[in-house]
Image (cartoon, each protein chain N blue to C red):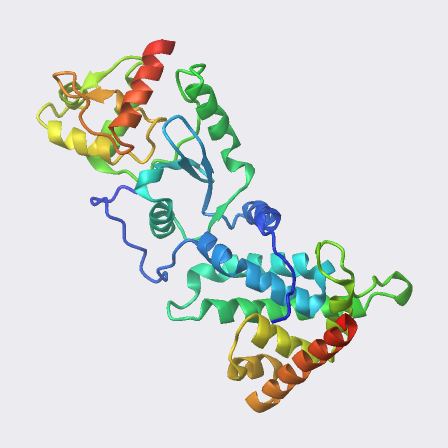
Length: 170
Length: 192
């Protein structure tokens, strides 16, 4: 305030960033599906909220050339893993059923049961490659291991889901 | 492709905006309302109402401009704009003559800011000419600059630039279009 000109330039040192709302608009649905695959439909809303709150915090300093979707998925990966780990530490008698169709109308209970039954690496690979659309190189960066291993995990995971679903439908 | 469910983001976005406001992470909260002068975008900072935009200004462009000039943490939602929406509804219903809202005037500086500060002193239902406004702000020769100040008013309706006309009584210009200006003047004439 109190400057001579009315055309505003960003303060030195701050990245030029547009409205965060546009990020939510553009990527919100994909990130929610990613969260559903990793933590199940029950906890997906919490994972989503934690992801976007953390992203909002960091948004002004994200480098201008960053891939926003990959950045969001990386945050979602960390937040979702936190939730999965916290769930494991809950005493068994208080543990919630890991999978439920509640809150996701129209979705079969079976799909979520199948997703939850996948080995973790396959489940994450499916989420990051088939749902978020990340290339295997970036999936591998999140999971550890090689891109080839990420590709195998994703394709084994999706094949397992497809086979079981097809068997059940026929 | 396997279908991982339909998505309704609206409640999640509400919750995100509320939490962001709580944690003081929200530079700008906005919402869009219907009005007799078309859809309006209302935007507020923690300090107060910072922008009202007409649909013809293009809301995406307005939000992007706010992100750059005020801060990029912009979200739709939160109760930050409840009072603004209520007072505007009362105004459009002819039941409110003045606004009692905290305003964040950071988008205006210098002479424009001085002109915009003068506008609320033009009484409801009355008008002044660009020349009269220039005189009132101590720069009687700056008639054109008054026109520019009105045309760049970031808070139209609440800061009543629609009450400024040409000396011959013709409408002059308006950011929301002349039809909107006519509608507001007519509303105030009937209710006054």
